[in-house]
Structures are given as C-alpha cells and as structure tokens.
Amino acid sequence: MTERTIQRSRALFDSGFYCAESVLMAVAEMRGVDSDLIPRIATGLCSGLARTGGLCGALSGAILALGLVAGRDSADESIEPVYRAVRQVIAQFEDAYGATTCGELTGCDLATDEGQRRFRETRQCERCADYVGEAARFALEALAGSTGAE
Image 1 (cartoon, rainbow, N blue to C red):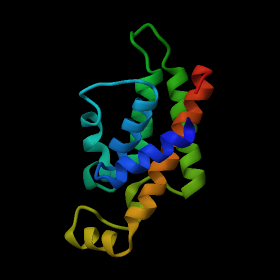
Image 2 (cartoon, rainbow, N blue to C red; image 1 turned 180 degrees about the vertical axis):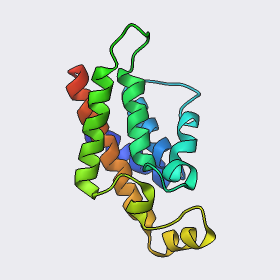
Image 3 (cartoon, rainbow, N blue to C red; image 1 turned 90 degrees about the vertical axis):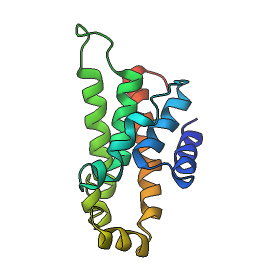
C-alpha cells in the first residue's frame, strides 16, 4: 500500500496538483478520508508556503496528513503522538535531502519571475516529484509507528 500511495502522490503532482496538495490527497485517499476540504486546505502551503521559500510544500502536506489521520479530536487528548510523528518526518526528510525549505531545496526564489524561470530551466519539478513521493512515504511510516497500522 505504501508504494501505491507514493505513486499516487507523484501522479497527482504530475497532473497539476502542487506538492502539499498531492501528498495530503494521496495519504487521505489511502486512509479512506474523503472531504471537500482536501486539497483546498493544503493549497497555501505549496511552493514553500506560497512562494516565500519557507517549509517545503511536500513536507507541509505530510504534516497535514499526520494531523488528519492521527490528530486529536478534543483538547483533552495528548498532542504528543502527532508531535513525535511530525518530528520523525522532518528528521527523515532533512536526512534525505539536507534541508527542509523550498528555497534551500530548489535554489530558486519562486516569488520572482526569474526564480520561476530558473525553476523550470533547471527542471526542479522533477526533484520536487521525488520530494512529494518521499514525503508521502515518510508520513506513512510515521503513521504506522504512531497508530500501529499502515
């Protein structure tokens, strides 16, 4: 099921959805979560937090997926299981790619026309597809550890 979700996240990305949207949608689909809010709640997180060079959108989508599947429903519940899972995913992503921000990962300032042109010319989209697939994988691994099931 993990490989199918990774492939689904990449297919969504290749179809025109952006990084955070693709990861969240693929994990939600795998978990049987259907909501009109998905992918809408992830859109502003794409392209490094709306092209600010911030947190990688794929990583943001993975964090949203963790909350969607394992987050709490009341203030009385512990935040710790999700926080542990989030820290795990962030650490795995940083270990794999050496950075967690869109700006560092792409080397492009997506807020500018020049940065967007550089992004296209250097085929960063292909690298971002890798980030999307691996972020989905890391989220699934963390969920398997925090909920005991994949």
